[in-house]
Image (cartoon, rainbow, N blue to C red):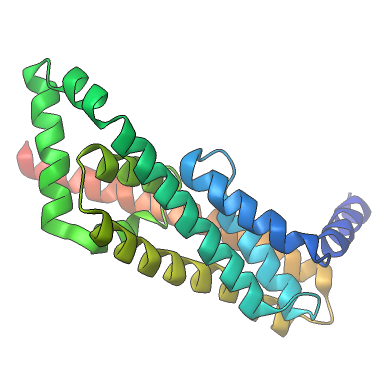
Length: 207
C-alpha cells in the first residue's frame, strides 16, 4: 500500500513539474468559478508544492491561479446578468422568492466587497455569490474591482501554502504532496465547519 502511494505521488510530482501544469491550473480555476465540480484550490496548492521543490516558478503559479479565478468569476457574473430578467421574474412570482431576492441584495449592499473575498474561499459559495451579483445587476466596475482583489488574495494564499510546504520538504517530495492534499481538504472542511457553526448560531438567535 505504501509503495502504491509513493508511486502515485511520484507520478504527481512528474505531472505537476510540466510547464503545461500552468495551463491546467488556469483552466481549472476558470471552470471551478462557473461550475464548482473540481476544487481548484487543490491544484493551486500542488502547483505551489511543485514550485517549492524547484519544478515550477511560484510567481507564475500565483499569476495563472489568480487570473483564472478572476476570469471565471466574471464569467459567472455575466451569466447571472444575462439571465437576470428571467431569474427575477421567476423568483418574484411568490412572496417567499421576493423576500429571498431582497435578502440577497441586502447582504451584497451591507457586506459588499468583503463578502466577495470571503466567498472566494468557499467552493460553490463563490459561484452562488458571483451569479447573484450578476442577477441583481450590481455595478460592473464595483464587481470587477472586488473580484480582482479576491482572486489575488486567493491565488497567493493557496499557492504559498503549497510553496512553503514544498520548500520545507525538498528532500521528501512524496511527503510534501501528501501534506498538500491533506491541507487542501482540511481547508475546505474547516471552512464548511465554520459556516455550519455560524448558521447554527444565527438560527438560535432567531428561534
